[in-house]
Length: 61
Image (cartoon, rainbow, N blue to C red; front, side):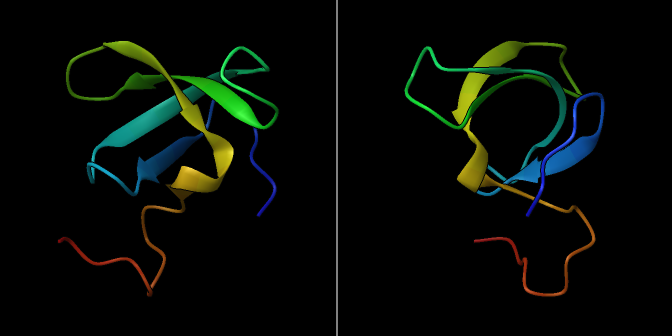
């Protein structure tokens, strides 16, 4: 999946909605700086851990 900046995705590990800010190599190639939609907390996550929030294969837990 192609990840774009300033787009909302669901972080698979926690289920939280996050907005992508910019790509980073800080934690290895393919990482993204994201901001949680609910709290504004920024974190670095692997791009492979993001999914479209409406993707039919995503389910909580």
